[in-house]
Length: 393
Image (cartoon, rainbow, N blue to C red):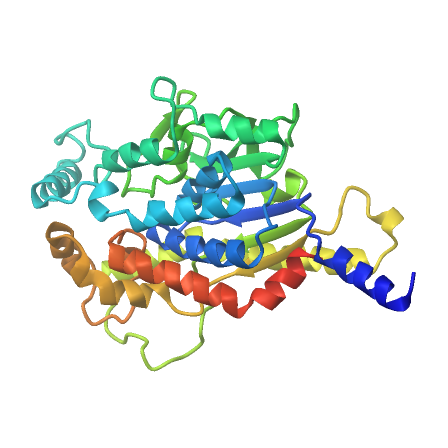
């Protein structure tokens, strides 16, 4: 073989992407999960041979991960179908937005509070009624009408391209994070920060993972109430790592914090501003800490002989994130929201605040969703060389 042939062969070997051990981790953030869809679209178009075997999802990221795991077709087709799901979404398809509906629930919680729990309806469990989201996902996830099962997951597991799907919830009784894992493996991990449970995933698991605390009602799974999976998830990368991932691509809808800046508000913080800070801390910031810890472990392992690694092993991680503050985009898109919700959100958040982190998680209007998808595509394309080098190792 001549020198040119050898070089061509080596280049060909480099360009072949092995999906074994590849994991995709999709974090929460409510409506911000549309940003993830834009990232995946750019990635699918630029690297059609990429199809991760391990998928994990938390909160709204669980919707995206489950759709990708259940879709019958190529990776590109599944991503485009997911884009279609988000583009067709409206706020009224996620929760009921009528002024009467919202006012009635607000009155219930106010009455329940001032009466010391003596008054108010017992069947109201959440600030909004998200039954429209259940109906919308039942249609787009191709859920079995009678059982609530999602048959596409089992088919893709049998076909072999999917190794495992994990959807994370928070058990309100125990206070622990629980990962519901659909896989053909007979045994999964135990004894970590996240309780693992083998399960045939259903729509109820997805609804539980996406149940924003206080805002959406909790969901009963195996006789216990569960809510958003990001509440107590201190190690968001842990489920993927314990399912055998060697290379993790994580997509977070949280922009990097910028120190200082002229747009920082100086007035007393509104309820919306405080809620936004808390939601970011609960759902999004821990991914950065977990990725940093994993990088430190990798650096340590590289400095010691492999025979001393024990049960540890290096796991490469890359995090994709927005370059723009999605909360600012939400503030600009607030006039597009339904009148009833706009009325209450005006009292919840200060009108002079440049960002609206809490609002960015519950604004499902087409203009805002479309912007998030577009930003995701642009940010991913800007880093495509780096991303491809990472995924191809």
